[in-house]
Image (tube, rainbow, N blue to C red; front, side, top):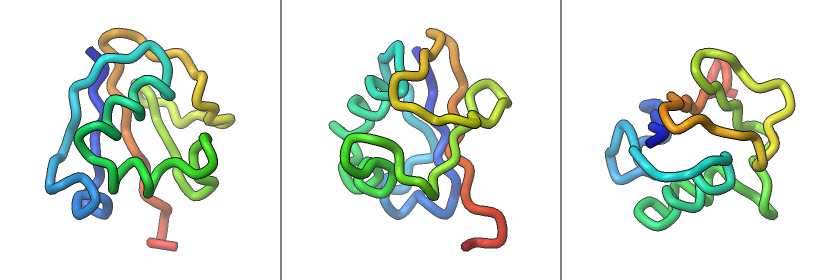
Length: 88
């Protein structure tokens, strides 16, 4: 199952969890699964059905240039939420 890693700056919204191992074949499915157990985190990441513009996502070490919610995710993917550089 894909693993979503949560940076320290977002752990307050994740209930203190550092990672979520969830089912999903697209980012939309992964975030929907996270929403079930961490709705506050989901609200910090998704707006109007798409990723918020200030959210960066890396899958298996590569930051996505065009982070669409329909991006395919491999079953063993490591997904990282990348906090803004400089905190802004």
